[in-house]
Length: 586
Image (cartoon, rainbow, N blue to C red; front, side, top):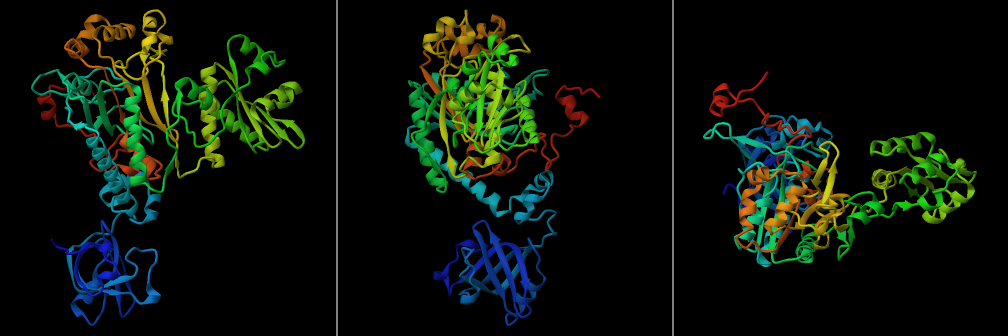
C-alpha cells in the first residue's frame, strides 16, 4: 500500500507515530513561515504542516495546488490548544510533513468541490460527475447506500432468503411502462428488452421451488423522468412462496424497522406502520402515497351543501359530484392573488375550480365566502373545525377528482407552512387497491399494478361482469409522500391468469405469444406466492435527507434522460447499424 493510515482516522492516541498518507489536496494555506495542507481521502481530512526546516517537503508544499494527488510521510503531533478545530474529526492533531511526493498533478476543477458547488448547474455537475463525487456530502450518500444494501442482504440472509441473479436481456411484455429494447445481431429483426423488473422471473423461481428469493435488481423503464425517477433504477426484489399478504408485509416492515436505526439513527419513525385502504388514502389525503407526517385531512362537506343556493354546487351534487374541503389553519388572511395561485394548482390537478371561505376578524371572506348562507358556513366550520384566521378550500367535482386536487393542495400547504417534521419517516401500508383502472385513451380496462396481481378471492365473480369493482391483493409501502415499494400476492393458477388477460382485452393468440411461458409454468405445480420490491434509490434519498434520487446515485442521468458525462445516447456508425440490420430515418 502507498499509505499506512487513512487521513480521517488519526486521533490524539496516534501522537508520535510516523505515518504515510495518500490522498487529494483539498486546500493549502501559506502562512509565511509555515504551509498548511488539508489532505483528503475517503475517510476524511487531516491537516498537514510543512515546516521550512524540512527543506524538501516545504518546497513541494509551496507549489502544490488543489486536487493534486499526494503521498505524505510525517509524524503525528498534537495541535496547540488555541488551534484545535472542533468541527473536524481530526481537529486535535496534525501531521508534520517529512516528505511530500506528487503522485499526480491536477488541473483546476471546472466545478467547485465544496458546498458552494451545489449551486452549480446540475448538467455541469453531471458532466464532471467523477469530480462532483469527491464532495463529502455525495461520498457520505454513497457510503450510506452501501450500508443500507449490506443491511438488506444480511437481514434477508438471516431470514432464509437466497440471492439469485436473473437475466438482463429478456422478452418485451406489457408490464406498465415502455421497454428499452436491444436489437439482436444474430437474429435480424428480433429484439431483446431490458427488464422493467424481474417480475416474471422471480415468479418462475417460485415455480422452481426456491421459496425465498431476493436480488439487488437493476431495472430499466423508458418513461418521463422527475426528481424521484430515473430510466435505470435499483430495487430490492424479493418473492416468497406459501405466504399471505401479512407474511410479506411482516418481512419488509421488520427489515425497514431495523434498517433505519442501523444506518440513519438521526431519523425517527412510528412502529408498527399504520395501514389504510387505497380508498381511505384517497379520501383522507387525496393520494395513494400519502404524507402522514401532518394532519390537514380532506373533509367531505357534501351533505350540508347538497341543497345550497349556489347553483353550481347543488346542480353538480345532483349529478353525482362531491364537495370536498381542505382547511388551512391560520391562512385566512391570504390575498386574492394567493388564492388565485391555489386555484391554479387545483385546476392543474384536474379540478374545475377552487372556492374559498375565510374566517377573519372582519367577518366571512374568501372568493365566494359571502355567497354562502350563514348556516352553510357554520356547517362547514363544524365539520372541519374552522375558526377565526382559517381558510377553507373547497372543490366541487367527481369524488376522485376533488380528492386528488385537494391532495395536491395539501402538499402545497405542507411546504408553505413547514408542517412536516423533517426528521420523521412516516411509513404506512396502503392495501386493497382496485384491480383495474379505465384507460380513457385506449377505451379499455388496464391493470393498476401488473397483470400477475391476484384479485381478492371474494371478488373473483366480478372479473367479467364488473371489472371496475374488483379489488386486488396488492399493497404499497409509502413514506413522506413517496411510494417506496409495491407488491402483491401473485396469481399462480393458469385459468385465473387467462381470465385476467381476457379481462384486459388480450386475444388468446396474443396472450400465448407474450405470456405462454408463464401460463405453461403454472401447469406444473406453481405454489401460492407473493412479494414486493422496495426502491433502494428513493429509500436512501429519504434516509440521506436529499431532495432527489440523483444525489444518491453514483452516475445518474439528467432529467431529460441523458448521460452528459458519456454523451449518451449517441449515434452508431453506419457499419454498426448494418450489423444490427437497422436503418434510421432522417
